[in-house]
Length: 195
Image (tube, rainbow, N blue to C red; front, top):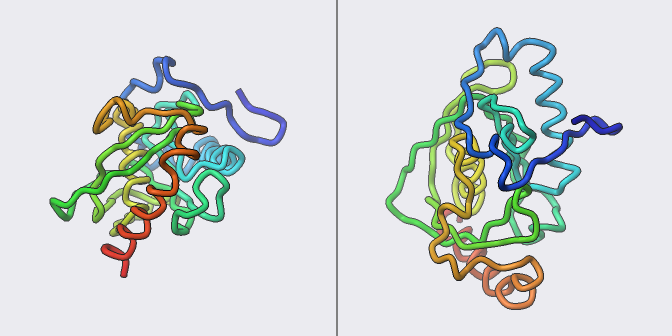
């Protein structure tokens, strides 16, 4: 469903589209006005919802597309900035055996956070919105965003990957009990992998 501001409705956990494996986008389809308009709507939806990323599944679409962009964001004020990146048909390669514990939330699971292990150095290959090959190395906390969004395209939610189900908490409990410690871990991860 489109809203007046051009954004799309975000679906929530329990909706079957969140459990579907996304379908690769053909080059001809990517270059169509319909797909380009959808990408613009996906970006606008992510920004309105103050997310660090969003995948097509989250707006009830099964195209293999996600968007990442982290800036000054009230949901994640201590995360480093990451420029707008549109990934079509992405594939992720882990470049280290290291893992860090990431306290994640999700626009499709409103109000909840939980701890997931993520790889701190990855390579992401795919196409940009123009259909050109895109290969980037992503390090630190930002690497977790890309893995989270790729999981969406595989029909996987962060709650499927919790280190411990006991880490699942509301946003309020996260803010009062865990956020300050998580901020410190973000700083350590960034110093280790992005220094």
